[in-house]
Length: 265
Image (cartoon, rainbow, N blue to C red; front, top):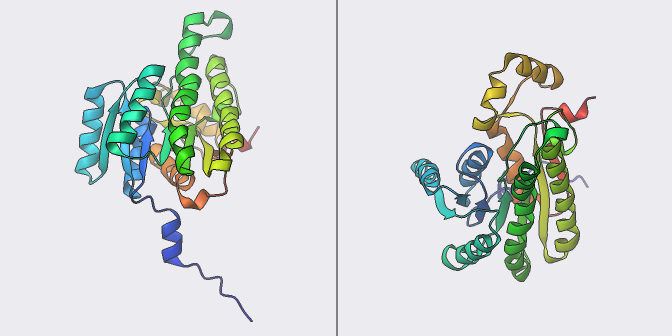
């Protein structure tokens, strides 16, 4: 007897369908966070934008709604532990269950390691690493009760590699990757999938100066097998995979989207 291996298009679509799911994305008024919000909305999800600036969130939400997205806003500072708990509780009670959490908020600070200031180290770690723990802990308590959830932590190509002048950033993203594995170890039993999405070099508002630096861009294109910067829209497919039923048995994994940079020495 022959078994047909022809894919079922309806089943394939359903695996990646995010209809009726809510996704909270930290730091999503611009850049990668905003691009992911747009991608999730196109996949059917209700997106909850987060940031510290109500004005920026209003602008981002207005644009998404004009494109037909279902969009909510949650203004809070992810480094403020009290505000995080109160805001997550409010979202759960007033907006609805957070089915998917994307820990995207982060920053970069460049300086030689021997000259890196204590206060800058603390500020970077608080946003890049501590906030991932604090926000995830608050959201996970609800996910554990429901025995369902998806957590996506935004890592980086610097999770695996290093460059001069960004050692603290590299340390923070390496720690996020291992925290992601720890989340999987603790929370997989509750049907929560915790994974990392690690972008390579992408064109965003924050990398504009590097994109415009001809010497750096030339180095990057030579170093990356794909020979170019990434477009933020190219992250959405991987993010939707990690947020959907298609990744129901993927846990503690770091998915690199880097044009092949990490594959080469």
